[in-house]
Length: 361
Ligand code: SF4
Image (cartoon, helix red, strand yellow):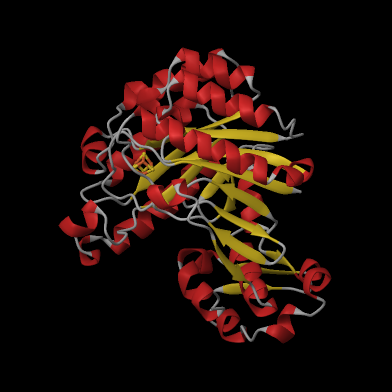
């Protein structure tokens, strides 16, 4: 089955670490034009929706839309009567309102992902996030009041000056909030971000970050989360169905500025500048060779803790992964584990996943 992703690029301000396609809107008119364009694009792909079973509205900050804009979009999506299992929306905690949650309920949204990152006020300041612990707490209580219990919290750790004690406070808060899913990422200094201008890679304490990764893993597991993807943890039955499509290399449609679709062995990418997207400047189309497909299948599949199933690989490509790639070196270094059915990262491989992935590029 397919996944449908819809990108809302607008943010009230720019976080210091962010390299997603986003922008601070000039005015309400620009947002209206964007929604108009998105609605046209939604119609363009309508023939695929009978095969869709997940919807994901991401950003940017989807809940920066005002109630009218939000309802217009949700109502438009509803017209296609997609038989979804999961319908997610990303939200910034400081912007959540009861009215928004009522709209989510009215249109069947059943999963909310909150950009918490941390509850430390100095950490949030460094990341240039405008919310606080109370905003996150209040959002979660409000969502639960409306039975929207499938909640993800994004957690960032390993940022400059963060201590183990700070991270423990974030983890204690997660435990108290009793949510269903955690996406936990270490801070990455992406090019052209504010943090990258102020700090250098060498300012990141790799040993401390490795200790933090072990702590996050241990504590989340103790809280009953299953570690199912390098950066993702879920309570039983709450893995992200939509995001698993990416890691399983299933097909998806990505609409909006910078949106990316993967269909019929092609990657179709929309312009990542709003003016070009609004002018319909055309998407770039990349035809993926069989070798590209195999490499992506392995790199994405190894992100899952269960790894890739060798028989699924044979069914998909009509060839055998052990013959297509020589990864014996990675097994010798204890970075990969294989038996007759599976190929997966070891615990050491999980910590050095990028080293493993480079070998398949
Ligand atoms: S809210 Fe999200 S998309 Fe917007 S700037 Fe911050 S991290 Fe980037």
